[in-house]
Image: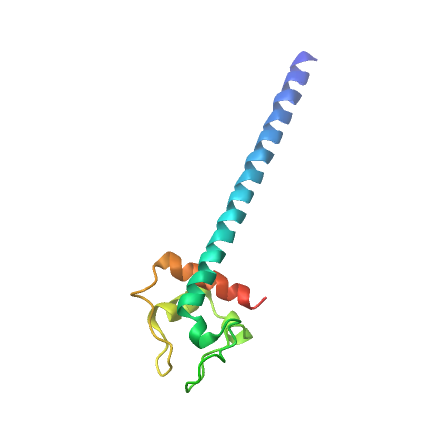
Length: 120
């Protein structure tokens, strides 16, 4: 009987500690995503807003062809890799220039996170 009680005690302790560790990791991930999103917004304001507008609708700057609506389904359906490539290389035949010399890989990921959030 004593061994069963000890087993249950240790098992319950393990479950509680595991839950606390998982909850802490979830909190850290949420906090990290929050700060990445804030940095993405800052970078978007600095590099993207002039053409795409504050809401990402692409109506801020009068060029032909007009800047793409980042909130559109056509853009939001693109893969992260495709959108990151466009940020990196730009888009031929448009005013969308390359940001490969200005933005780090982490910066591009943060901007992408913010662009995804614009559609919500």
